[in-house]
Image (tube, rainbow over all chains, first blue to last red; front, side, top):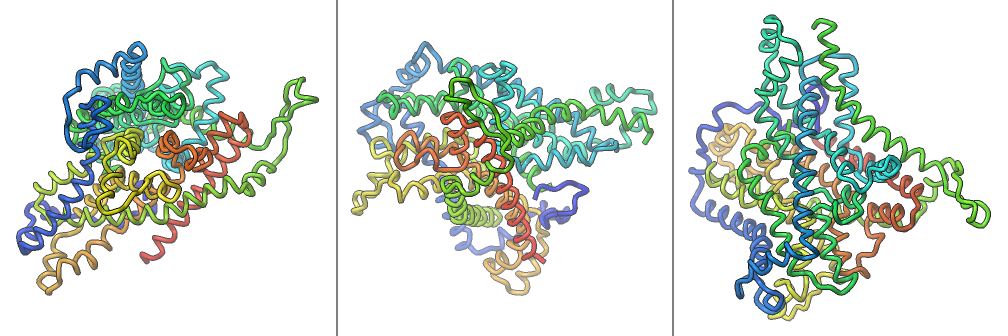
Length: 308
Length: 294
């Protein structure tokens, strides 16, 4: 359960862990060889299941149309990567590049703004006791239960009243307010920003804004990176919101563009399967690079957000 | 804490509060407002349309709408099979990881998390093609054994989507459960082993009860996600519009009511209803699972 530090429902998983547990894992060594083999086989099978679709996608991206339809899907047949890439980037006057840029714009700028707002809010919630604090936090946690459609449809109508539909703002503005980021930022602040430090800075005469900018934000670099990364992934993966508020293809994201390409076949009989698959692989690349480079951050983010 | 300091602290949360009002509270209020009205064509539809207050009529219509309630029931039944299955696999994976040295476990964990790195839409795109009899390798896999399965047949669409969701979700859920397992005091296992308990017995009697909280959490998150199922069926619809029709899941119906039928009032009603159903389902699930723990 997503709980607050002052909430009533604490899952048994947060039972205090003794410090010794990380030092050694004697249980693994003490197990019989058969047990280890059983474990390795099980995990290898699961890994194969997890990886084979990605492998297939990589292989498919190297094939031309004929190879795609006629050769064995799990192995290479001819090398047409460059040709496929050229097609993806030149189709429809290079619209794919535009979608890529849009995805980066929405996810990058939206998450950066959203992270800053979330850090300030998390800090305010974690380190100040002001009237209405509980209500704000209740809003944060309560919003986890709100279906996206309940927000997106009225938002579309409101945005169309003020002329924001089909502009980048329709994607950027909703990204600025992310309750989950606020929740994470609060948890991180509680874990890393000591009261004593803030008090010391105050005694030295530093203003509250100055304390936040030059002390708290600096301590929160790791937490901020995690919040940013998770928000970035979230926006990059978004589908329902862009599908609703972005109409013209010039403003689409990669997801919407690929969805549209994939649907062309049923719609107008144009088979873009080869383009779709190469495009799909390309759209994973930034995610894969970012997540691998920042693995430390998001793996803690995933578990921290869930367990705290 | 000094009074002025408190208010300065509150000021840090003001941008979020303002945004929350405009991006959450106002839209929800607007949806509720809309759900109480009905669009009416005046005269012969020539004089434009007016809005008429109808109270809870839209809700009555929604609750007795067999298409909408049918889709809720369909997704609910599907959840009852897919979510436990996915969580059991994730749990087994986490237990297996827990039996390895930290280094080996780290390696496998990264491999198993690869699907989580892939955007949901792209994952659905890839699987739709894997299932495809023309380009995918899976259909011909059954041929030597005399199976000629069609992953898009009416009876196979839900299992096909279920497999896709399971594939996409195992890694994420496993990481959460594994993190919970890591917090179990290791001495418990040692003590149990000294008492002669088998590894299987330890897993069943110590480890699984300890990660109950993580299982409840992942179950809850899965339910929330499942009732809002949209992306995957939308992509399946590209391939099999006959089997996956436009009222396949609740969100698809809402989207259609709003953007194809232009019936915003009814779409707003259904999204409020869906939010209520989601709230009730989460509450019931939480009560049910936490009562057992007592």
